[in-house]
Image (tube, rainbow, N blue to C red; front, side):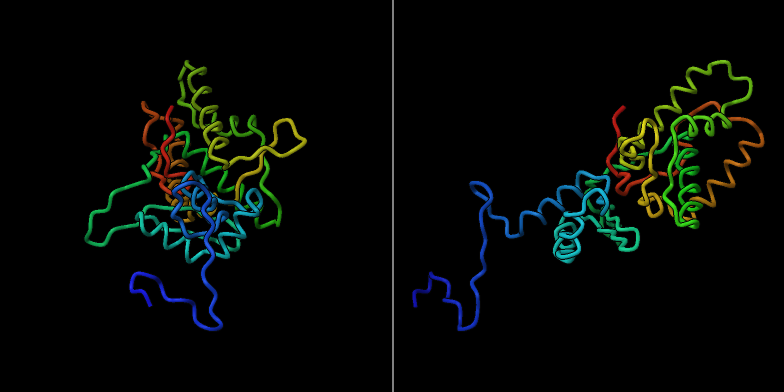
Length: 236
């Protein structure tokens, strides 16, 4: 046997089949699994209802996907009940890791909107229904938090509309086919915005609402979010 040649497969063994997808391709994972990795990195998440083929590929090759993401310091979160998956930055233990995902700070009004949608999602899930909303209804809810005596209603309305558009962009609000202005709240919000954060924000914002004051600033009222909501900072 030539020492520079690989050994022949033994009896009953199959030689691995690898098909190059482009010139110079040295990858060793299937095409659909590569698509899964790309979607997870692009964000904000994989949702079985929107990405059925990718979801099946993810479940089939979950260990491999998790391994590849771990190579670049990312953790894979998979919720088989909600059928949602996303990436988040791995938390170092005594080491300093380079960060691929940037932290996105939520403004006060962003957080107010997310809190409202998270509550709607919980209520709808308890009834066994999908959470469906209209933008006008969301804007009316956010108006509760407009600073009393504030005469710049146009600026507040612009911020509120921007918050709604941000969630559309990040697929947390998805337009229902055949409707003019009706959107479904993504189930992913249940794991991107966990119960403990809801409770803390609810207490804070109820106090603010009682005082009818939005404050002088609209930057940084909420917690940072770095998962698939996406952990990829919006440029505005």
